[in-house]
Length: 349
Image (cartoon, rainbow, N blue to C red; front, side, top):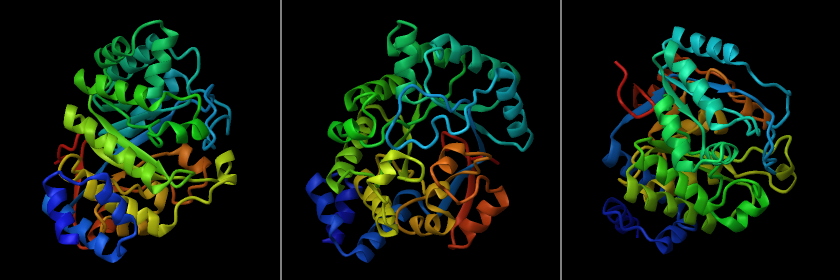
């Protein structure tokens, strides 16, 4: 069975039925197949990006059941404070700034454009920011279309969009997890618009809350469909659900370590050559489990992450920063080749 799966993945012909069978297949055979696919598609290099997360505010009007970050501290950074954080990242030669934060009524298109312009006028750094939900609310607050909002963001200096707010792209699950966020179709439409406007994005999946394996597979199939239409995704970032300090944590203990590895492996099989880069998020699953995921289909170790208040608020105990040297050691520790990259997977010399 696994030889056929290997061939069908490379040909881009994995079906939902194929993927569902993999859930109950021998997991060692699954991991081996995913690792062989990784080696065939992207080789033995493991990439990472030197970046800084800047969480600009923890105030938010949305109120998702899985969120531990909302009003955890109660703050909003000024433009000057954000610029100081960017400066610190530039000083350690980071190539990417990730701007995150809650959604508030005053965060209009102009609000973000002014911020992006301020950063870009002072620093030459890749600006990776906003998810479809932030685009949706900024456009709504400014009474413009999401396409108009995205065009303004691009022109103000936004380089890439985050694939966040996807969670699970199944509306029956979203109704329980994040009823005030965009619908599955709205998420798909906004991401597709961004790609068509020349704004690439990451793609994400948040698994381990209340969704089923079928929901996870449906989600991955949607991402593959978008990629085949736009070729705008740079990578998939699987994010395991962290249940500390949030309502959803009372209903779910999160994914098992085995499920963490199976998710990365099945994603590799489904996405094949369509989305060749799959990240093992050490901030979510820890460095040792990330090393394991890199042996089960993943090929990227994510960012050095100078800060990640969101994961820490939700119970991540895996630290907030890895130096380049630590990244190299982790990757060499599993016999692979470390390569620093940009957000868009260009090599950093």
